[in-house]
Amino acid sequence: MSQTQSNKQKNNRLKKIAVTASVSVSASLALIKLLASLYTGSLAVLSSLVDSLSDIFSSLITFIAVKFSSLPASEQHRYGYGKAEALSALIQSAFIAGSGVFVVYEGISRFISPRPVDGAGVGMAVMIVCTLITLGLIAFQKYVVKKTASLAVSADSAHYMVDIVTNLSIVVGLAVVKIFEIYWFDTLAALFVSSYLLINAYKIACEAIALLMDKELPDDVRKEIERVVTECDFCRGIHDLRTRDLGEMYMFELHLELDGDLSLAKAHDLTDEVEEKLKKHFPNAQVIIHQDPAGLKENRLDNHLVKKA
Image (cartoon, rainbow, N blue to C red; front, side, top):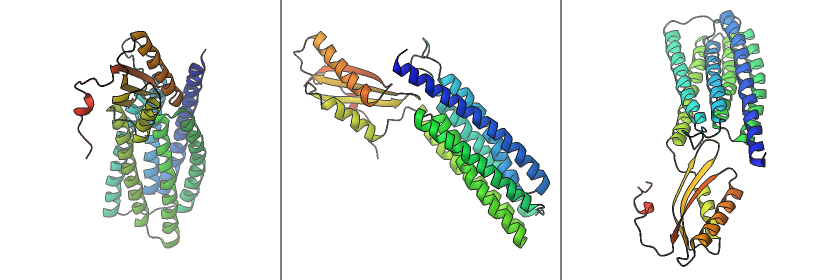
């Protein structure tokens, strides 16, 4: 087995462990928050429960996406299945947004018809425990994302980063309710949670859509590709460079300008050299290179692209 295949298997194993842990933690937190919500009647705790339920759904979607994206390329999907993770992130963002809208609706209802909050101290204790558990999960997810660059696990981790902020805001809200008996502050905390959910859903959706729409990779990646290629002493130029993220790997397409007097065999060997250099800088990348005689006048893609505003 090659080193690349071994690393890919390790990464897939890490991602599966991460999403399994995520589902388990989400289910446990949801149960704890359900009991706390029923006991206290707090809308803020209820909003956190809704968030945890969305996390369960999102984590299950992530689990399916990670399993699907790890499949090898097939005759019908020759680029592989890496974008399944971006698709799952998009579905997650929709579910998170729906959860946020639900809490906003409930919050407006509570402002119109206020309800007392009982057992604020219990609610605070529950949210603190949930925060500590969530911090442990986030630390592990960050490790997995660093090792695998998984968009699905990263999106899943983003939910729990939101949980930390929202849990702490709920603790503050319940403390105000307990000490000053300002019950509408509980509703205010819930609305803060929902706003954070909606903003987070928007960010996740933008990232997922960018990948699904084959948005060009960042400028620093493109500049590095150009640097690696042009540093080859036989390179006479580069044009029509296109890049995209396939989910688990990058893909580069470019036209390499070479001496027009080279034989086909020699041009092929030099192109292989460029490809190997690129793969050293970007492991697992797929590289497609078209050779052009230097100085050739042709209708280039670069001349037809819409410039950035």
